[in-house]
Length: 384
Ligand code: SF4
Image 1 (cartoon, protein in one colour):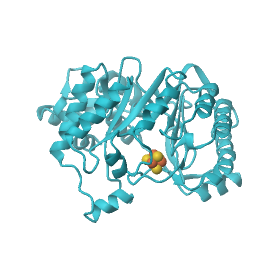
Image 2 (cartoon, rainbow, N blue to C red; image 1 turned 90 degrees about the vertical axis):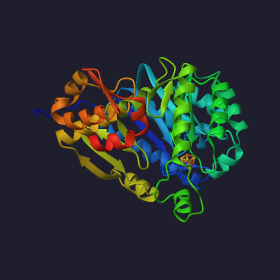
Image 3 (tube, helix red, strand yellow; image 1 turned 60 degrees about the vertical axis):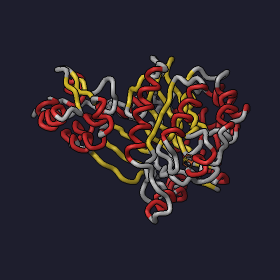
């Protein structure tokens, strides 16, 4: 195996985290804060300092920006405008670049939608999750199904590109519920859909209920049939699967997320934000007062940091690339990015999963088979 240290370049992507939320949803493991809106001004000042430090005080042009949360649209229109101005200052976006902001139904109004559009945002990702009141209650979401349609009335005239997030496998749901949710989403005409299977993240309120036996997870067979229906139904609708949980019409893939799935570098600022800069992965503290105090004292808020050796980085690149269900791992691209020969590094597990029918190998690229998609976690763990 031969690998040379890559020549590091500055990231061409930036992630900005806004942690404020109306309340904490039961399944949520993100760095999100309920009842902390009074900290928004301090937070904006801190994140401005962090952007300046992250760029070394020299604006860094990027190809895509993602403002996620939390709920970025929990900020008021004036605060959103100021946040976007700071981002434009430190991370000027290349012409034709993609700038996404996550929004929650119920927190978007016309003043905020105008602030986003005028601030340079050109893509909105809307967290619908479900269109069924009982399933939204099970997730402890605090929006009503009809608020998704209302939010889209604000989004459609201002943004050419938008996406909906949905969750399947919610406790108490059936395959029929999921069919209804997907059909409702399709009736809204999305060009991009993210469909995630519910994960019981350790420590969340939902995980505690599930652990105590108060909540029953959906059985594996039903969850598989929900996922299978998703792939087939969206394909028929012209929304091709391009990543294990993501579906888009041609030209509507999330360019920011593709940065993660090719293991490319990205800036990350804000509470709990992760980044990958010059070969070093790190993330900020998730404790809000530690974050604010450190930035206010002119320090950074970095918590865990990891520098991967070339082989670990190559393995990590392989599993991220494999998540891209159409592209998979293209041998020549993998060698160019990692300086490793894919077959020297991972030939044995690849051959094993090809013979089990979970991966396909056409000589130039490796991809999941349809059966492999249902056992993706097992295959990805094995490669890592
Ligand atoms: S709105 Fe999103 S980020 Fe906020 S608590 Fe709910 S799931 Fe978490």
